[in-house]
Image 1 (cartoon, each protein chain N blue to C red):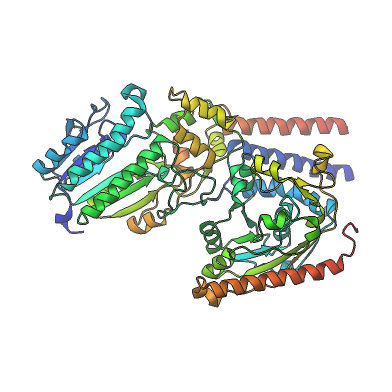
Image 2 (cartoon, helix red, strand yellow):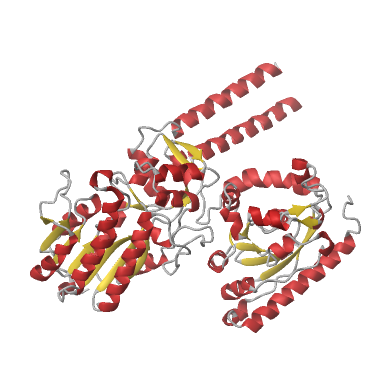
Length: 286
Length: 346
């Protein structure tokens, strides 16, 4: 009897897997104007990342209720971890914890779109170039946009500076939110700092490769490809209370307003980080 | 739109090619157009029906006499070539016609007091191709870098001349239509010939976003721009997007990823297999915003996926992975697995 039922489950799984393959091979799916392929993201990318998030990093997620259930919103996070794995984890957390399983559309650095393979994967999973036209277009069409204003200063900072927020650039993200009236949702990510602790940076090599930095971690490049395995740190992700910008639309070009709001967001995230770190005294705890 | 604003004498350039011939024939068939002159340095193709059109086979310099002598009210400049034609002098002749031809034509237009309207065929290649580009181009986006492709550079020159013309003749309503690549059952372009191959070489590690405009929609918009005032520059593309890989799959073809330097070499070797313009498109893709077009013309072209399907229907020969075959393979696979599992269990 039990075998009968499990047989049906497997039949259905095989059938849906084959149907997915057929749709992919015949091109019968939809991609939006940014190149975002929702079917591929939900069917292939998310299941893989979910294993990493749940089983490898044992991630706990708080404040999913702060993600707007509809309409535009700008999610601002702290950036760390030598490679931008925190961005993909934040996007997955947003999808899994938000009302209506909303996709977070990440804004990526230009070098992502310079590289083959990476540029293709990035666009398909919903990343677009971090520039004002793209950010405003996504926000005004009611999408959730994820941004890391620290940029390379955040991802490529040495391990001793972990959980210290870096400078927030020119605050272009604030202007985009103000111009579109989208709320700003601060997000804090704890755990990404320890996956590839950056203890050195070989600058000449970075210059030769045209990369922003060349990382040296306790395992990379010493262990070769094995050094690419992220350390199994314990992750905590928190979405903070949204900061409304609706009634500040006409102030998007006022540099004072923009700087102050950027500072406010930065301090909020820094405070959230400190609070999360107190909940996780041991970076490699269960 | 007052009746007397309709141009009674129209000059169409580029009638040796599909687009120009179609527009000239459609205009000649209208009762409110009295005379259509088709100007082209090359003879029209034999399968075009240009019975109502006065064809003048000469280079665009002779436009001045025609415009002044016949009192031309509207000029549709469609003699813009998107890829070199080896039988017609290759890239050198293409540049000559695109750049020098446009310069001569606009110089002639500038001298013509009777002229009221100018329509110029342009291309979304005007936005160039760079990894720093925004995902969606609006008409105000400036190209980041000088494009590598010859056609894109020609387009920038052509639009530059039109800007100059607009300054000198503000009384003429000048319409610039930036077309996405044309598609349709009857369209014949280098890109479409490329996509109709059984195996389509693509750039390894890149999957560009493509947009197409159905030729019928392009024809309708050009004709309306000739007959009505729609001054300005407009993106013209089917809404929606197809990834190149997706387009290749929908056409039942097989993609053949090749490293970018390999394709660049093939383009440099000439032979018309692939051009630098096409490599740029295949690396960076190109999607444009058409809200200005929709607002001005009150018309939305058929979507890119729909226009592409129309192309696929007429190019079924050469397809290997058709939806029917895939569905049949899926069915037999599923049945085999179910049978094997039943047998294992019993």
